[in-house]
Length: 257
Image 1 (cartoon, rainbow, N blue to C red):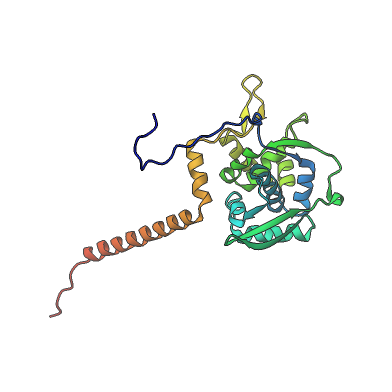
Image 2: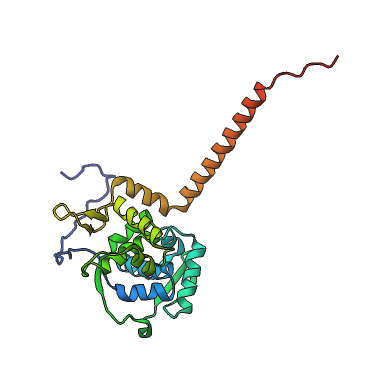
């Protein structure tokens, strides 16, 4: 019933208009992983991964401008590292970028330059859901790049040697590659097939509640700095308490005869 209070706000009428059915499905990007690993060999692993992350975030949010920190926290790197990687990509004619101030926030505007001269000979198209990139800050840049390399080997018969992984991803050797492969197992991206017993590659599982909380923590630099300050304060307080305890245990000085 409408209110009888004369001071109550006037009721409104909202006319419901028909809308088309909302699209369903995952937000994805089409990636040529052969060209991606050619870029890894030509420019560097971190630079190539940065370019891929820009594409995923741009597809996911529809935004063509990002804060530097939006890229840095997902790559578990500093803002300075991201800017240096952008400079290297610019030097190799893969991106064009400039910094400007939008609504009082320092923003990097990036344009992706497709240079056909650096394209790989063998095209390997893969459809990557953009939600997979939220696994990147949880497992780290080298491990996520190893995961992408294993995607390129799914259609090949035979085993993938750690030496092949190390060479493609730019790791220090087969032991370093084996360590990252074990890390993929711990995160459930590599698993034993229940029937054949072979090691198979799995899609990144949905994020748990604990992982979502960790990502929110990583996304806020003020929280990370505050936690560092609290830890430093606790260490200094503990050192002060230990110093007082040690001084209290010293025997009193005796007067000289």
